[in-house]
Image (cartoon, one colour):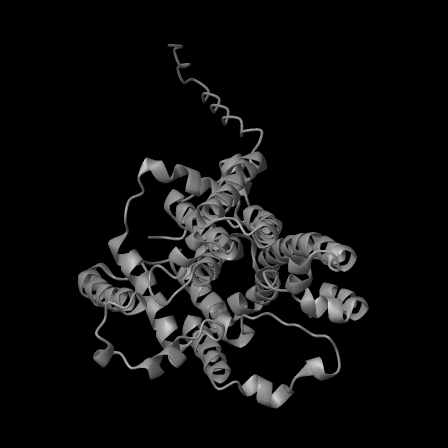
Amino acid sequence: MECQMELSPSELTRSGAARRDARLDAIRGFLLVIMAAVHVPTPLSQALHEPFGFTSAAEGFVFLGACLAGRVYGNTYTRSGWLAMARRVWARGKVVYLMHLGVVMPMALLAWTAGSHVAGLANQFHDFLQHPWESLALMPLLLHQPPLFDILPLYVVLLAATPLAMRAARRAGWTPVLAVSAALWLAAQFKLEARLLGDPAHWLPVRCSSFNFMAWQFLWIAGLATGETSLRQPIIGRQCRAAVGMSAGVLVLVGLLARHGLWPQTLFSPHLYSWMDKWTLGPLRLLNFGAWVVFLLTWNPRLPAVFAPLSLLGRNSLAVFTFHIPLVIGATLLIQACAPTAAVQVVIGLYVIALLFPWAAWQEWPPAAPAPAPAPQSGAAAPVAA
C-alpha cells in the first residue's frame, strides 16, 4: 500500500494535481473515529480501547501522517529543491500551531472563568488552574499542554524537524537517520532525558506532552522514510512479500490474542506489560505496531465503497481532530454532570462521532468544479457532442 495522500485537507483533491489513495484516507478516518470514541468516557470507549492489540489509534495517526509527509514533501524536494520543500513543511507546521492555539487558549480561558462552577472542567485543566498566568505564557511556547491538547504540539515539533531529517536522508540515506532516531528512542526507554535535564516543573508550571518526544520521533522518522522511499521503489520486494507478510501476520495474531486475554497466561509473563508502555513506545508495543504496518503493506487490501465517509474524515484530518477536542470535553462534562445510563452514554458518544462527518464535509464545500477539458490540438478533429 503506497502512501499517496496529501496532508492538507483538500489541496490536491481540489486542484486535481495528484491522485489520493482513498484507502489511507479511510484508515485515518477510522483512527479519528476510534479517538473520538475512546476520549468520551462511555462503554463504547472501553470496547474500542486498543482493539487491534497493543497499539492505539495514536500510533497509526502519527505514522500515517509521517508517511504522507515523506511522500508529498519528498516529491516537492525532488521537483523544487530543499528550500521550497522546507517552506512548505514549515507553512504546514504554522497552520497546525495556530489551530492548536485556536482551540487550547479559548478552552483554557473558559476553564479559568467557569472552572469554579464546573467540577469536570476544573479537573480537565487542573494544572493550568494552579498557575493560570504562568501557564498562559507557556502555552504559545508549547510548554504547557493540558490533557487532550498534547498531540498537535507533538506534530508541530515533528514538522519543524522534518526538513532537516529529509536533507540528512538525501545526503547519507535513511539508514543512518533511522539509526540516530532509534538511539533516541532507546534513550527514552531508560528515561535518560529526565535524568540529564531534571524536572523543569520545579521552577515553572511546565506540562509537556504525555507522548515522550524522544520515543515518538522514531515513529515519525520511520514514517517519513517509508513515504519518501515509496516514491522510488516498493517498500517490500515482491520476491519476499509472502514470507514477510506471513511472519507479520503471526505477530499481529499474537498481539490480538494477548491483548484480549485469549493467550495462555503461562506463555505471557505479566512483566512483559512494562515493555508495552504507550507514552514511551515500549519495545513490544513498537513491535506490535510494526507488524501491523508490514502486514497491511503486504496484504494491500482494496477498499469497499461503504468506507467512503471515512475517507472524508481522513482527507480533513487536522480540522476534524481539532474539532473533536471541544466536542469530547463537552460530552464528558455532560456525562459527569448528568450521570446518564450506559445506553445514553453510548448515544452521546455516537453523537460526537456523527458530528465529525458534517464538519469534514463543510471543509470541502463548495465541491471542486470539474477540470476543463483540454483544448484540441491544431489540426485535430474536435470532439463530437453526445
